[in-house]
Image (cartoon, rainbow, N blue to C red; front, side, top):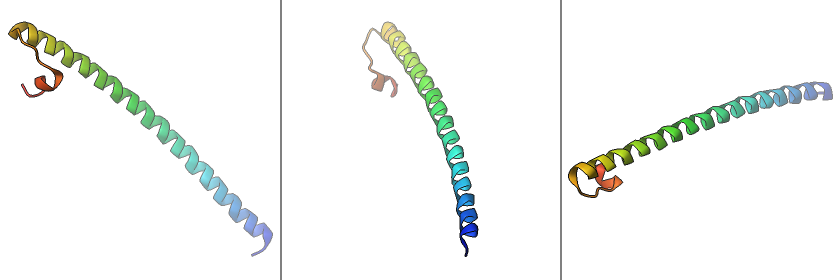
Length: 72
């Protein structure tokens, strides 16, 4: 194989790797965004759970922890 053909072959591989890198970078950004959304939902649910625990404590006059309320 002569140098020109080898150069074309390597250039094509380089372009292919650059495209894969761009696709993977996009996937990373999407997953980070999704992780942030899930973290926000988790935080919201934990606030809601804490709020429900407070209501239960007021109704029953007892103390329930977060782990206890999950078993009620």
